[in-house]
Image (cartoon, rainbow, N blue to C red; front, side):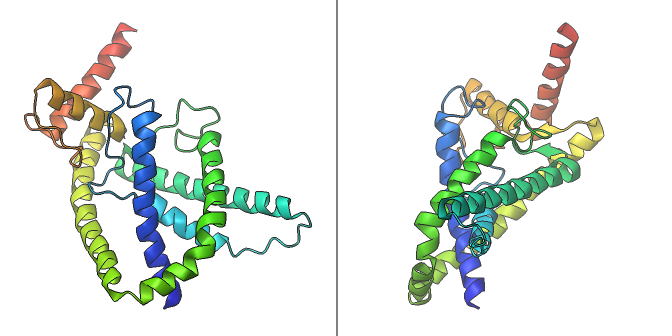
Length: 244
């Protein structure tokens, strides 16, 4: 029961914290956001990213691995963090492939990064996971039992977590319906759809038409249906290839 509460809480916390990290990263560092605007990251509507939620759970489970067979304490930490980073990178690869193969949708694209594998993972972001693993181990993991004790003794907070999972489930259902429409279009036209590219084009289209910008509803355009926007993107790509 205690392990279930820990995992439930960690997924909740990791999804929200990860959303915040991605929000800042895309605002100030992402190459896909040259306008430097605040962009709701991910394919869900709300302020959470499941990839980070699962990653935090993975970090928690891996933190119990015994690396005492390594004599040097510093080397122990380096090896442990490397193992954490590689496991999360592997999970990131599996998640990316599920969407590409099953949904025909690319959620993120590292194809321009050195050493990338199918544009899903790359050494640069594995290194970032290594840093986040170290931050987790030293700052978060030692306090998890304290947080769990606080969580179990403040029943009102359990309603907050329960509310999160309720909203998350509804959001997931809504977002998967949109993904299903994109998958249908992708299969009919034998293409892989880049989610970030579609979201950016929708944002620019809304600005061009002086429509209300939807920070949360990144796939919503007032004047054009989703399949028309995707079709326009594909046509522009074909024109560029012809001109080249």
